[in-house]
Image (tube, rainbow over all chains, first blue to last red; front, side, top):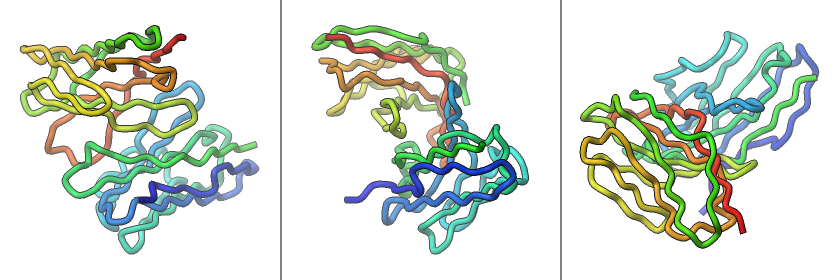
Length: 114
Length: 111
């Protein structure tokens, strides 16, 4: 079956602009996660959804970052007033009920802020 | 979640077993050991997990010491495609949320 998909695969934006990153999880997966990976850095958790609710937003680095999930499926991560330090690969993952340890990751969106 | 320690890098000859160690000396009784890997330019991939018994699946084997303070991931016959960063993660089995990734071990499989 289809895996986790993310769009766009690459995004170049100017400092100060807003961007939206999209994630389509595996069909039927109830949990959805956003992570980011900066050059030379490890994987950093951002936010976790169970259904349409976000019980853990602890990794969002500032109030410029927000995310929503609708219909228990697609999720959008929005970054407002982008800064150069936001440049990273943004990864989305999903997991089925009861198997949160087995997260399936998408290919990521590479964001470059110029 | 308990802290894990892994060597930053390892080499392995193609066709030989790759043994990747992980130290988790502060692991709690309810915490499992999980392994993921990340091949270059891809998202991480789940490999295997265990609590205290040794585990084996089609990808790898996981050996956990009796005191559970360390574990070893074994790739029995490493191929060039196994070149990746391998992450050892410890967290409670009841945890339903995030994974916390450390720096991992970069495994280079050489021909």
